[in-house]
Image (cartoon, rainbow, N blue to C red):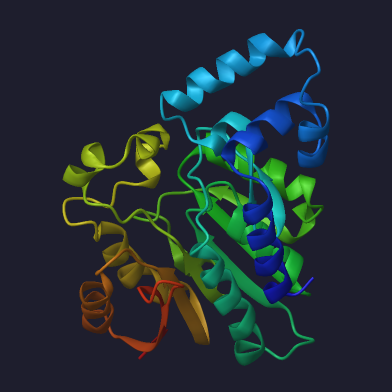
Length: 278
């Protein structure tokens, strides 16, 4: 399935099933069509489960945590409240890395990728599925998140292509190994803004949201340390938040990076930065 086909399939799913239909079909173990065809059937023991689930959703708990899964790049991923919920915009980062793969290495050669802050493992697992002859190191500071990521790697049968490692981007010595690509979707929300965000976001792990006082702490760390771990001709590919592009580019340039490309998301917002060591 191509990337375009995955996006089309996802849009079709969104048109076919709304949130209530997803919840009810999941609880009752039926399709959308069966849900309406059997709408008069007794709920039986499912009634209590439905009441509990609706209460959770009315309290603003994200649907993805209630269902325990989400879709990303056309793949299903297990989710728990220990990990950040993947957003559609992050698929652009995966697609950019896939396109860069042939640029940094010939198609038959092995490509070494480091992901910093893997969370659910959606980026690392997607890359492992999409790229032949790729060796991926996926790091996170959270052991709970790494357990979820490992389960997702096992689910999609790519565990042999990914090494999971607990580490802190502020202390991990990237010189231990070198990579063709360093990839990250780091926390980038300003600390003071988190509590004022929509209620659903309050359920997500703060460690996956908090980018420090100005939201840029992790970009400073990446700019400082990622150069040590890149092979010659390698690329740093990072996701950024709304209106952060000028500040992040300034951090990179000051740290002797060359910004090669800025990718906008579906809403025209600058979302992905590709940089090389200058």
